[in-house]
Length: 315
Figure 1: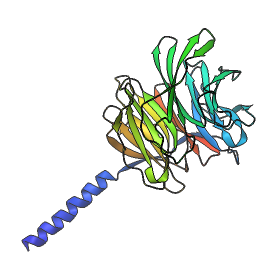
Figure 2 (figure 1 turned 60 degrees about the horizontal axis):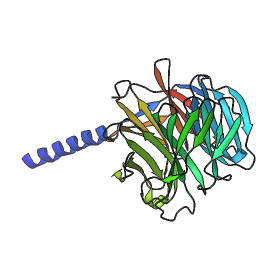
Figure 3 (figure 1 turned 60 degrees about the vertical axis):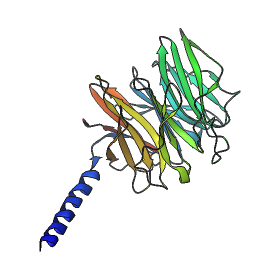
Figure 4 (figure 1 turned 180 degrees about the horizontal axis):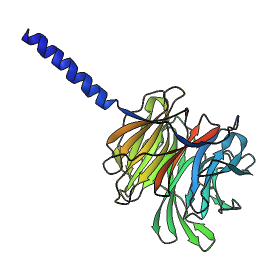
């Protein structure tokens, strides 16, 4: 009898433990969904703070779309014929940088989306993701993932440039290879200057993972953050930063039927929880923005529209 009681006690404890580990958060009240655009291939999202505008790459239509960041209303489209625009980031709320795979460069625009020039054409072969951090006033470090000859192991898939702002103009240095992690198929990349961390998504199915690298040395901090199922692509990466420098990473696990967003502690990269968004699936790019005292998450839904949700307080 004693053994039977112990057995049932073990089962109860195990179930409680499992429920704790699998607890998830589901956001059900969207701020907006943009009007869907069929056959769009929407990919990545950038954010212009002063204009309260999101910038979205639409690779299959060779366009860049602008939407209101609070209401999702379409503002305008910028054609980029034959470019296959993919990654996007915004520096100093002044320059919009877009990786263009088929042009093999990074295109630079002002906030009115006037084309200013490009860089990387001598080094890039198949650029995808892009991120940066601030070094000093007017000085930034830009990182781009290069997925050339994808599915072959390479140790030069992350390139970096010094990006310097001079009034309304920019200059860039020659490229350098960042670190030497072995990667096969890369796209999303994001950096956290405060904790000197870079996250990069490995999308080759046999190696699916999000890797953490030291932002100063390029050395691997964590080979695999975990929580991703083989068969679902690791995709968009974003960061929530609180005033006291706490916060968390959001890493997308792209799926048509189990589309998930894994949360990791900003400082030590430990897993926190998993997030779902109502009526959002097959997410590629994501972005976060802080407006009116709240954090918001923007996510691509099924390659054809953007969904926006207010993020809850997460400890």
